Length: 622
Image (spheres, rainbow, N blue to C red):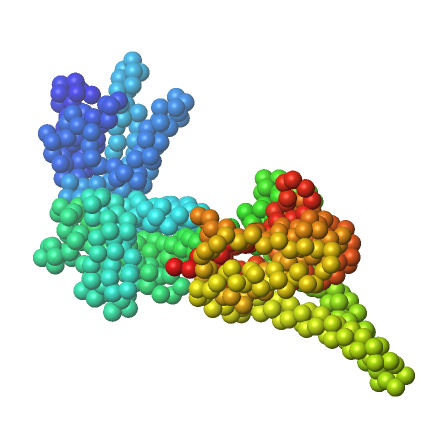
């Protein structure tokens, strides 16, 4: 082509006098011919363009340009070898012009491909309108694709970045950003074409372009003027001459704004329309992402509440398959989440609004209570599991207490009623000795009733933490001697030995409470030694404190019950609990009175024979 241009005067004259712009390029798209009409149409001289790739094709149309060249290369010979398209091309001043291009494959005489030649015609009004409509249709299709992509994304930061990238692509802006409205401030949360250090930059809403747009009640606006724009943070973009702004709304409230910044090309109404459409769709995409973030936060909060709950919580879907199983449920049932999730509930699920109590498999003595509630909107079933072992044991203990107390009260009351009735109706018939015997029996039974009532009252006060003791120095030796002396006269088959060193220290506590404690210990020693025997009371000063032990030669306490005997309504013998009577409050009261004084009480087996050793520790007086 160069040879023709250089040596053929006729060909050169045709090119120079042609009314249409003629541009030829080689196989690397570098200019080989650039006629005067091309200079007039596009503004670059032939000297500027020859040997260069002409900067005519907008980025968004490069795919179209390449497709035309590819079609020319693959078309069969003899079909005309030309393609005509209506499109847009850049001028040297940055403006776009509508043109119709007839493009042909350029070959030499031997058929070897040299490049392409294009004849550019200025588009007439019909061509311009047709091109304008085609361009709008292309942009609308691209906008729909972008919106679909945005709505499919649920991460807010990613959505904002994609909105900014789409803004650059659709409007041809040189840079862009998205600012979020935070009260009376703006925060730059996404940007493109600007230094990343600007991310997070803030500004006052009232004096910003966003504030101006809100006051004007416009959804889009243009700002121009170098002096005005130089005061804004966007002046980081060199050559900035125009800012296009589109407001974005979330639930009918302004959420932020989309900025398009131009330092090269001019802005037209198409760019503003695209900006307004994109800003509107951005509100929808941001709304979806914000709603999703709220759901995620809510679910995380619910997950944290469920995981930290002391109650076991299981969530079952419509098909009653376990979908959630919190740590407490694993601890209560002994079934880890990995075994349960995806399967059926490991126990019979209660009906919605109802509850059931059951003993979990493999955990004898444990009792769980489960209640269920159905979520109407989803059909899910939420099952709450609570450990009621203690409550069930207390319920059983109360039943036992009522049965035992009624039995313990019935016997002395029956005896008192019988002897009192005899005295009333047969006073004159009875001898003086019989009358005295009857009165003595009534007195003895009344004393038993008094002790029983005293135990009931002390037990009730102990359970309510209302045991009142006085902490003061007292003579422990004197209390021991008094209790031992009193019990020596109560039995002919028991003996009481007291071993207290001379000069034994005083204790710090309540003398009356200690007297009750020791009395109960000796009473138990007598009661659980039905065949008699020796009861030994010793006192020693040890590093732990003042230690008093009461040892008997009775039936002892069953293995495993040495701690249990201090609970309410519990008796230590493993056989018939009614054999020895009592309501199971004595040692419970003993422990509570001991602890109220800052002491300790424990039960131990005898190492060298039958019986039990009760060990009482009290603090010494200062």
